[in-house]
Structure formats: C-alpha cells, structure tokens
Length: 457
Image (cartoon, rainbow, N blue to C red; front, side, top):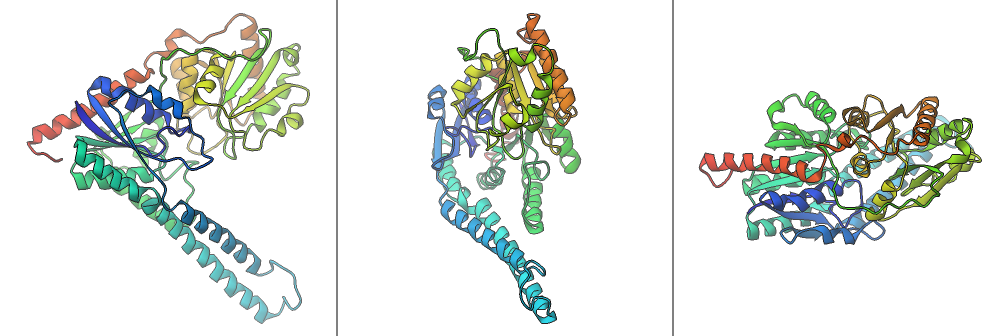
C-alpha cells in the first residue's frame, strides 16, 4: 500500500467546518490503496472537539498531533496590539478635548504620538502574523511530519486549507523530501470573506506565500468549480491542467432522525454556526413576514442548532410571537440526527464576497434527503449546487420578502406531502466516490514519479 502524508491542522477531534473533509478522505483512502499519515493540531481548551468521531477511522490511518507551542505568546501579542490601537486612537488629533488641546505644539505632539502608535500597531501585526504562520503550530508540526516521513516513507504530500499555513508547511516538506505536492483549497486564498490581512505588509507577505506555494503544487484541488475559475483568474500563471474540482460530499452511515417537535409542525432547521459573517437577522425578519400567511404562524417552527454567536436575543425582537428556538452546540453525530429529523433544512450565507464556495453543510443536507431552502447569493456556490442537484429552493440572503415567499412555498409543499428531495440529487456526492477521484489523482502523480526513473520528484 502506498502512503500519503496529509497535513490537516483541524483534523478531528476538532469539530469544525474544516475537519470533515480531511477526515473522510483519510477514512476511505485505504480502500483505494493509500495509507494516510495525518499531521494535525491538538485542540486548545475550549475549542469544539468530538473525540468519538475517531472511532470511525480504520487501523491503516496514523494520526499525530502537535500542540501550538507559541499560543500564549500569540495571545500576548494580540493583547499588545489592542493596547497599541487604543493608544493610537487616544493620541489622534482631536480624539480628546482637554485644556490647551488646541495649542499648535500640543496638536503636533499628539500627531507624532499617534503616528508612532500606529507604526507600533503595524509592526506588532506583522510580528503576530509571522509567529502564527511560521512558528506557532508549524514549527513542531514540521518536525513531527519529518519523523513520520522518515519512518513510513510517503510517496506524496497532501495538505488542506484554511488555515492556509498548513499549505505553506506542506510546500516546505515537499521540497525537502522531494515529493509531489497536492493542495486542497476548501476556500479562496487571498480574497473572499475569510481573508482579512491586518496590514498592507501582511497582505503582501501572504500573497507572496500563495504564489510560491500554488506554483510548487503538482495538483490543486478545489471544492467548487466557481472557486477554481476565480482562483485561475487571480493566478493566471497556474497551468489550467493542474487544477481540478472534487466537491465535498456525505457519508452513507445510518442516521436515526431526531425531530423534537410534534408531527403536525413544519420544522425549518438551520444546523451550523452563527457569527458576525453569518447572521440570522434577515431570516428572522422573513420568518415574521411568512407568519402573516394564514396558518403558517401556528404550524411552522424555526430552529437554529449550533453556536449562536450572541444572536439568540434577536428572535423575540425580529420574529415576535413565532416559534423560534436556539438549541446551542451539539456533537457532529447529533447534528446529523437533527438534519434527518427536519422537514426543511436551511442553508444560510450572509456575505457578499467569496460566495463561490459551496458550504460543506450542504452535502450533509443532501445525505439527510430533506428539501433544502438555500438563503444565499444566487450567483454563489451554494446556489450552484441547488441548481445542479435540484435539492431545493433558492432565496437571496439580502431579500427578506423573497425569503418569506420561499418559506411559505416550502410550507405549502410540506402540507401537500412533499417530504423529500429527488433521489437523484445525491448522485455523485458520496464520500467514497469522491475519495476514489482523489486516489486516482494520487496514482497519476505516483506513476509520473515511476516513469521519471527517480526516487524523488
């Protein structure tokens, strides 16, 4: 059996949006002739984790986890940055009205102090980025990966991001070990809602990292064809032939539905995280608008499961008198049971940049087989998947009237007995099938190495 070194910082027991894809690839690669050597990170106290998932892995999967050795230092740097920002604001001309503050010499001194504080903030931001990128997790993970490679001699290296520092680590290892490099991009790099460099210097450094690492890769896998095309436009030097799409998917393990509501209620359910980027305000207002439809208010339930990011209090203000419930975070296994127990599963994306990505949650919804209402950008990746599969309806995330119209339409369809999506919607998105495509990519690269007649790439 061939071996692949897999760099996946958020590999389970992390219970995060980026943990499922590498987990299922590792789970099924042995069926296709590859033994995974996984390098992950050790969760910090308070980070969501689900150790039970590891019981699904076959014995051919080897997992090593390295800690974030500089985590306390990075946190201290973050604290210093906050203090420096506060100092910069307090020293800005006109920030505070005090005795003599209008004197020219006082204003000049304030201006100099403000510039010095701003420069300190910028230096601290760049130092923090360097510590995070090069040392915090990557330094020890690199050592662990070298030891694993020395013992098991992998044929190639695969890495997934975000976090994108894992891709940079994998590129260095591939260069040092002389192995083919395969990158897996679940989200865009150097654009989109997840990319928020603190300073121009940080932005320039990360763009340089992206160009170097992407150029080194023999294959770059994207989870959405929209992301592939957008990245190709932004990095035109990348040969089109080495770019490919392997979407996320679902596992076919049996799931016992968990409903939690009477059968005469139409349960709309969102399973996932709410935060500053994904907000429920428009959905809640739309639910209130839908409540004006005769019978809807009494029959429909909106339930949100997962970390709510402080949005829980909005329900009574934005959807008064309607049945809205927040359940909080649950294990991955229980979240799947809730998806299977829904009547309509809700996708929610409330960002206007980087919408080419397809949500990993969408594929778990495909597994559940219940109709989907996608409250998303109609031109984005989630809408693309709905149109490709016919799994559900689409409503623009920023159009509350349109969302309300689709909520009512879903409810009427439920009353008419439409309780599942078309069976064909699931075709081509099973994890085993998708892993077979990744293994075929690996086999091609290994064959290229053999044909070259060399032990290294």
